[in-house]
Length: 69
Image (tube, rainbow, N blue to C red; front, side, top):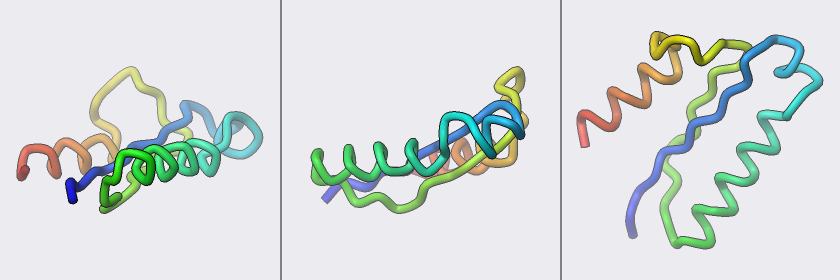
């Protein structure tokens, strides 16, 4: 079975608390992984962090995982 890593993010604290829910994003990723028969190893989260830069903790973790293969 192939492995997958999910990444979820909202750009503001307000969105993290009341907007597009991180839980809803996580549920969609989990459903997709199930549908495609993928092992979801991890779901990485950046809550309330703008996408202006790749220097987000979660994004850095994701890039590290991708580079390691």
